[in-house]
Amino acid sequence: MAKAFRVLRGYLTAAGIDQRYLANQMGVSISYVSSRITARSPWDADDMYFIMDMLNIPHDQMNVLFPKDGKAPLGALPTMQKAGVTNDAI
Image 1 (cartoon, rainbow, N blue to C red):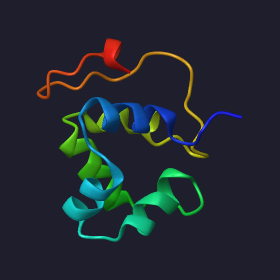
Image 2 (cartoon, helix red, strand yellow):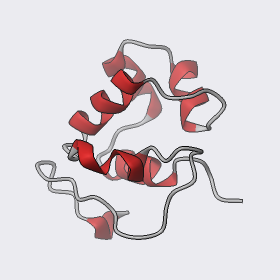
Image 3 (tube, helix red, strand yellow):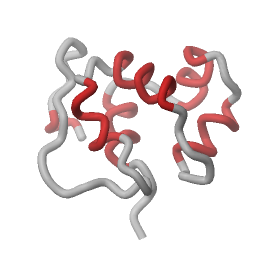
Image 4 (tube, helix red, strand yellow):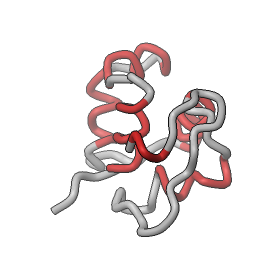
């Protein structure tokens, strides 16, 4: 079975962002981030927007990084616009 939020994980890794750094930037605990990345707890809308902004991904691509059940949809991946990370890095 594929890991939950695999696209999100890929973009965070490509941007050099680990769970500790993400938690620090969000002002939450590492366990808070971990429980969401593993789909044990649901993401808060504010957290999703924060991460999208951090990765410079347009909000209209939220369904790709944050699919309903954590399972990535098939199809196009969003491109990180300002960070200079391409889909090839994922």
